[in-house]
Amino acid sequence: MGGFVAWPDAPEGQNVDFNDWAASGGLEAVKARIEGVIEQAQAQPAAQPEPPAEAKTQSRKSSGPKHDRFTIDDRGVWFTEVDQDGRPKPPLWVCSKLEVTAQTRDADSREWGYLLEFSDPGGNHRTWAAPAKMLAGDGAEFRGVLLSLGLRISTATRARQLLATYVQTRQPEALARCVDRVGWHPGGVYVLPDDVIGQACERLIFQAEVATENTLRQRGTLDQWRSRVASYAVGNSRLTFAISAAFAGMVLRHSGEGGGGFHLVGASSSGKSTALRLAASVYGPANYAQNWRSTSNAIEGTAAAHCDRTLILDEIAQIDAREVGECAYMLSNGTGKARASRTGQPRPRLTWLLMLLSAGEVGIAQHMASVNKTARAGQELRLVDLPADAGLNMGVFERLHDKDSPQALAQYLGKAANVYHGNAARAFLEHIVSRADALREHMRSALDRLILEWVPEAASGQVHRVARRFAVVGAAGELATTAGLTGWPAGEAERAARRCFQDWLATRGGLGNSEDRQMLAQVRRFLELHGEGRFTDWNRADDDHAPRTLSRAGFRKAAKDAAGDVESWTYYVLPETFKTEVCAGFDVKAVLRVLRDAGHLAPDKGRPFDCRPRLPGLGKATVYCIKPSIFEDVDD
Image 1 (cartoon, helix red, strand yellow):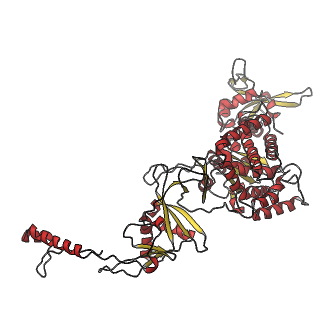
Image 2 (cartoon, rainbow, N blue to C red):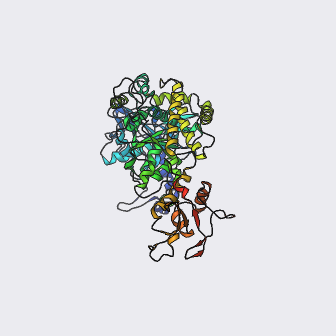
């Protein structure tokens, strides 16, 4: 250390410390010895070791302590040790040039970390906000992330240990606020993995424990994307809707609507993937679009990485049918699963708000049915099925522009999107960030206007809810057109969104609630399956030659025409069977209410739902009488 040492007097061969000498020689002797060494030190200051000639200076923004043994130059970070006599040893190379430019922390002055900047071997500038907690332990995970980003690190054990010491001993003057999710933040700023759009009161940095792939990359120019990709969506409602949905993810928070999405359903080679590819071109290359082939846990991380954007997922059939319903809930609700830390305390949940655009050959309900699961109305409303076929026997296409066939147009758009992509999202973000104060009012007034134009008065609350999501897409597309990004004529995005909403409404089968249709369908299915096997024929109940009814669910009474032929059947369902089997998965009173309001239930006068006829062989009993009209109330 270049210091001076005071030694006690000790006979040769004996181990004597200052306590021993104080006891034998007195405290005055000890004091005199120490003062003598102090005078020696004052007369001859200790020499400080000189750094290597090539590393005498260090960047101020990454400065270390006063007597710092770390030095930095264009070749990297060096550490200089000294021997027992204070002479410097040859410097040890730790890693390639690495600067600590700021200390980071969250809004609560917790989760501290370091902003690291360096260049990879290809000359690309890299920035990573490293959480300080990654340096606990041996720092292997910390070094792994840096290696994956392109930092060269010495293989020597001592040098690897010194890397953590180097980062932790830097004293940069700058402070930055770290955020753990991308998207909108207070002050009207939008945080991207590698950039911040807008002016915040302090520097914002996206900080993640794992450096994720940045799929927001640009190629070509905005003019080229507008003329060679977006222009071909004009006249094609599904393509216009897909591109508008990509813009909608960035304004969803300002619209006041919750998360949710759209699922393009159609046969193979109908153009669904082309529509998703055009939506992805707003943000970046083809790999911006993800795949459903994942677990629900992995999709959490994917969703958080797409907060305040549009998440694009293809091939819904590749996710486990037992998980797809829960994934639909999770993605639209915007909250991951609750998990405990090693101490049992709850970990912070991942949160997000996004628009989802999906595609597949089957819808969510059909996919769940493949494993005998029933899709709830909430799941179908959060990810609504939109027919991919626009009705002209050309799949998603309605207008071919200058191409000869739908296949030729699909091939062209796939190639064009690979060459021109990524500029529209950046330009759109810059446009809306500059108008962030008025964006909320603009979106909400646009939604209210479109709902008045689109939705009939008799529509249920569920139809209104989905209609507002379609309206968000239409309003976002118009906002992008107003900003000069799409080149579409005014009103094109709204027309496409309205057309898609009407097609969804027609496929859905009505303006009522989905649960009502599901309840009626379940009752009808039970009667179709068991009408003859588990319901005793009222008119043959006393016939000894009539077949026996096993696992009886009730009775059925025939209505015959003048010729004596059976025209219809009225069913009398026993109450316990009705509750446990017919209404399985639904509230019993809710099912009875839907049957009564639809005119399919025949209760006794003064009774809300049931009746008490005298049943053959059972006497007077409480049953639910279901009319034949239930078989007539079937969606086309």
